[in-house]
Structures are given as C-alpha cells and as structure tokens.
Image (cartoon, rainbow, N blue to C red; front, side):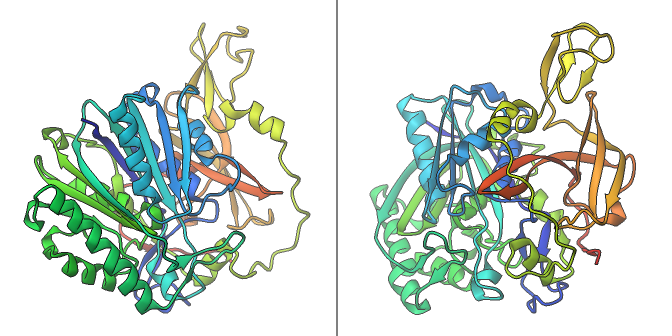
Length: 481
C-alpha cells in the first residue's frame, strides 16, 4: 500500500500585517520576496522533505502550481536539478487549476501503487496575485509543501480517494494576465464551493461506510476564513477536527493550500488517525490517509510549516511589497541599462555549479573549493576532484559588503563571502537579510533564488540567507530609503 513517507513545507520570511504602513488591515499574510517564485519555494519545501534521506532513491518529481514561471518549458526539471535528483527520473508539471496539488499527489500514489516508481516527490507552490488591496489579495498567501510518496517506511498509508470534475468559471486568470479574476461571490460560493465539496466528501464517506466522527483531522481548502468555517459546518465536522487554516497568519496558498494543511495535520497526528485532504477547483478531490506508528518519529528535525511560520519579519510598507510584485513603479533610483540575456548554452553547461551547487573535493589532499576546478589550489593535483553538494550544508558569513548604487530591487545589495562547515568558500548575494542582523560570523544557509528575468529567461542561482530558527520574535522590517 503506498503512502506518505516524509513531508516538508516552506513559508517565506516576510509578512504583510498590522504594522505594515498602507496595508490598512489587521490580517497577516505571507509574501514571497522579490527573488522568489513557485519554483524557488518548491525547492525549499523539497529540501525540507528530503532532509536526511537518500535522494538517489527518488524516481519521480511532480510539480503543482497555478503560477508557473515558465508556460512552455518544464519547471519540474529545474526543481529536480536544484534538489540534486538523478537524471533517470520522470518529471511533470501539473498546473492550471487550484486542485492541481491533490491531482499531483494522486498521480504519485497511483505511480507507486502500480510499481512504476519506488518513491515520488510531490511539490506544490503558489503565489497568486489579486488586485491591489482587494479581498483576494488580503486572504491569499505564498508558500509551498512537499510530500514524499513511497511504498515502504510510510508514516501515513493511503486510504482511498474520490474526485468530482465540473466545469465552473468562478475563479480564473487568462494567459498573459497578472491578476486572478472572480465571478459574483454568492454564485461562486453557493453553486461552486458549498455544493461541489460536500457532494465529494459525502460520496467518499458513503462509499467506505464512514461517518464524520471516524475522521480525526480535515485539511480543507477554502479561499478565506468565513467560507472555511461555513463549509466545515456544512460538511458536519466539529471545530476540533479541522486543521487550523492559518488565515491571519499565512493565507490561502492556492494549489499548495490543502497539502500545506495536510503537512500541518501530519505534524500534529498520532498513530491510527484518519486524515482527509480536500481540494477545490473545477471540481473536488478528497484524499484520505491513515497514520502509522512511524508518525511519532517522523521528520524530527524538519521545520515544516510551523517552524517557518514562527520565523518571520513584517514588512514596514505596502509600497515595498508593491515594488517586489511590480504592481506599480516606485523605484526612484537611477535607471541602468537592461542586463543582457544569459547564455542558454552557459546555463546548461554550468548546471552542476549553478543549480546543483556542486563544489569539488580533492581526492589527494581533501581540500574543497567552489566552483570545482581541474587543478587543486592546495596540492596542484589535476582532475582529482569529486563533486560535493553544498546547497544543504551549514555555513557562516566570512565577510560582506553593501552596495547602495547597484540599482538592486532591495537596496543595498549585500554581497557575501560564506565559508561552508565542510570546507570551501563561496561569493554570492545575501537575501532575506535585515541590515541590523548582518554581521561577520553569523550562521547562514543557502537558498535557491531567482537572479533576474531577461527575455523570458529565468536565471536561478543560490544565495545566502540568515538561518531561520523557530521561536524568533516577530520584527518590523526597516527598508533603507
């Protein structure tokens, strides 16, 4: 019987909240930094899920989102390279609908059950954009979830599913449009969410002779808190059965939302519990899992959703967020010539260095350097280096500089030199940084980010970021003028 063997999640560091000038709302939501997108967030969630596991055992990766950076080019291939997975795997993008997260998870479960794969990693991420200061913008959030589906060593067995597909135009975004559109609220709720979801859940329970009392936790999709609570009552579940939807802390993360709530359910679950993940969008998917005794020891060091939620910084101004999203032009810095488009040949040739973040360790003297070189600078041995993945290695800040005239989105541009604990030194940018916390010797971790987009080419690389630890008190971000 296939099931879930590991889980992970990622929530960006920044928030819009009550302390954000111009936000004009007490509601808090997670927002991705200017150099993040659904691919970079998926890499972070996938790395959290695979922590301590053998990545060579993964046979497939399925990426789910409604906001893919590329419409024609496989985004899952970028994620697989950044996570240092084998080339001999299948990859797929599942996109275009809010229930793509559960569709990807169901596809992975079917592949493992059929025997075509031993382990399949499912990653889902979204950063949907509503019109500025609209209800959709306030209730949405950015984030990602990852689930490793396997046959052996599972912490939650797959316990069945039921799906409904229905063509309904209640929320949509046409090709080339930036903002999500919605039809009249009452129609979308009564003829969509509150009709389709109860039908699917009722059919699932009836087919298996189950009642609502047999379910311990429900990870339920809804666009906002009011409709979530209303839908839960309509389904007949008591409040203690509902996984806290995190409106007011995270927001609805689109295709990733039911999987992020499922991760939260797994974090809280005990053995023998029946969990439901319920999605919505042109129909509904209901997926059920029953936890095993292995749930107690699962992912003890994974930050999951809870750890990332607690490590946050509140933006000081809505204008900063608007500049990140290019909702309007607020940058008064001097204009610079547009950067040249990156070489496609170079991007392909330097995949190991730039995406997999491989350094090289000399097999003769053990010296590690980044990037990997043919000649060891320590002992001058030639062609003796073995690749070492540095993306998941802890590091410290050796030195740094701040550039106030670089024309960066996030001024000043912090250029860092980091030393890895396993050896090796790297020159890179620093992201998610607060100027007051940047200091020599501070612990950092590598974060997969987008450098720039030129001529439709997304140029990804690794940046250093302050180490995010659970339990940090919220702060208000001071952005340099």
